[in-house]
Amino acid sequence: MILPFLKKMQDSPRGYRIANTVFFFVSGFGYSSWASRIPDIKAQLHLSEAQFGAVLFAFPIGLMFTMPFTGKLLNKYSSRYCMLLGAVLFNIVLSMPGFTAFVWQLIIILLLFGASRNIFNLSINAQALEVQKLYPKSIMTRFHAVWSLAGFAGAGLGYVMVTQNIAPSYHLLGISVAMLAVTAFFYPMSIHTEPVPVKKKFFSVPDKNLIKFALICFVSMACENTMYDWSGIYFQNILHASPKLSTAAFVFFMTAVTLGRFLGDYGVMKFGIKQILFYSGILITLGFLVCFLLPFVYPTIFGYVLIGVGVSCVVPLVFSIAGKSKSLSSGSALTSISTIGYLGFLVVPPMVGFISEFLSMKWAFLVMAVLGGIMILMVNKIGEEE
Image (cartoon, rainbow, N blue to C red; front, top):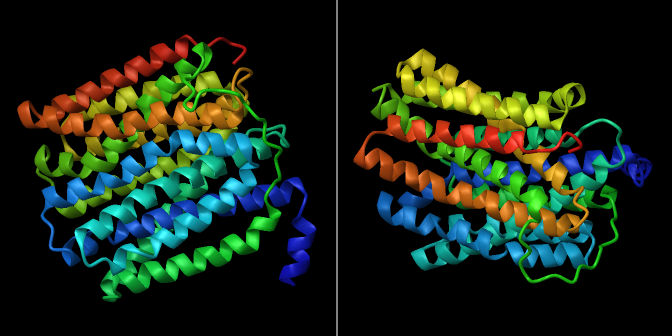
């Protein structure tokens, strides 16, 4: 029954869409599975918070340094082949952290993990752009919604593994094998694209038109990662809430992100990309302002929901616009915008820590509201034709 289904779906828009959806799931499930075992791996290596924080920085270093290389790959080969390479490397490396016995081993693994995740994520987004061209309606945000759902699923399974005292080595190895099997099964259904050779520098800065979108992406990624890193601490340090309430607030945020991505395509069809980006900036700004002005449990949870909906659709919609660039190939446009966007993901959350140290985390959240205002200004510079 399975093989006839696979054959029927091959070389069809529906099959391409299913395959790309599955690869988004593989990415989100694998990443959240790793994240769910971070405390155990930290304890396994007997590292302090500061030491482990320094080790974790290897992941974004690996990601950032392979951005130009990934752009070259996407310009030279079909995004389908790049996606297969990224998926295989990503899942092989995923199996390794639980077996580490020394810090240097984990650092090398995280460098490779960041590099493989970069190749995998950019290529599945490049594939998504090709699938989007086959549909008259917007479908981009739902791919990212599936990534969020996979994140919930991976975190949930991780919780079960922890409560059942399953070692990280067996857990992550099992996930790796399962996701490699899924990759092998669904890869034949993925869409083949002809690469467009581009004679450019190793790193391509976004053209004048795309810089606006790169800055919008920067703000959204900065705000999203700030919530990942600091939302729980804000609840505990500013609101003096219990760990359970802090966790619940983060679940509200993640639920808002997921629902926003599932509904985002409907919003694009009704209002257009520019309006959705504008509303996103408004929601991000209002959400952080609510947290700043009303530092109480329920208003802050409401603020988290506003921020979650606000950041939910920005990155997939910016990627969608990048794919239409006339001066850069899809691979180059995605790479250059992602590079600037990930700078926000990496640089701003540590800035929140510095502001919190010298002033208060409330003031750090006010700075994030200002970033949301900057995003609104950038959206207003987008021409109607975009």
